[in-house]
Length: 289
Image (tube, rainbow, N blue to C red; front, side, top):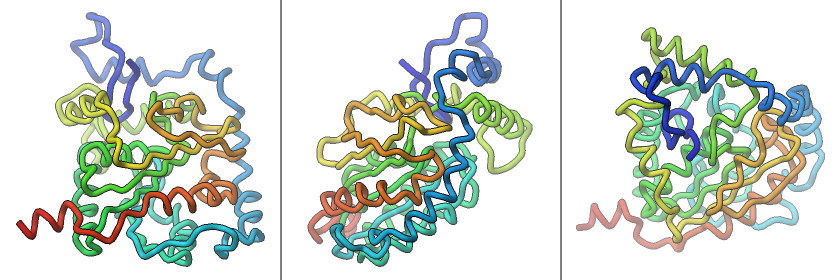
């Protein structure tokens, strides 16, 4: 078993550290040489500007040569240390394609997983209730792990999830420099700084349900796409290969997946497949009863 960062399955701590979740978190978050050598150089993330420029020149941004939407709702969830604005380009593109998009309401994705997913579930319920159909979720990096958790918790409300560079089998399979940042954020959260996860989110009661749900099979009625890149400078690409997902490889930076033309060509047909009939959603069915 591997660690579900910010609340998920994890290796069993040795007895000497089991009594201190915070201490185990710090030990697990420290970089090691093996992890460093197994990742592409982090400077590859400097490709973001070029990837955005290439997208702006590509006809896919105008919706040419790809399936369009039918008015179905799509919830977009940003990655770690990012907010809704990081997915602004993709949001505008999806609207041009005919989807009804919704932001996650996240300014900075650094909060406790359970609290964040609970808020997203409320937003998901409102979207399903408003449009009378299940909702597709697009999540980047940590946002993709949230999308997966939402699909497992509420398959009645989710038509499919598309994860962009999301380390789902081991969300701490990240570049050691980023892992150090996770450690700092966790320590600050442990000191009481609001809006931040804490070391106890890894082993404490707050995220116990998420750790248990991650062990359950992914619902067969929900579409599941995972886009990964072997040249990802942040996430070890193998951690994106969830056995339940359709895995598609692109040549992209980690941060650039939200603006990469090849990603857009993969996401568009996936969302078209996810689109559920405009029938009564789970939320509407409950209300009608």
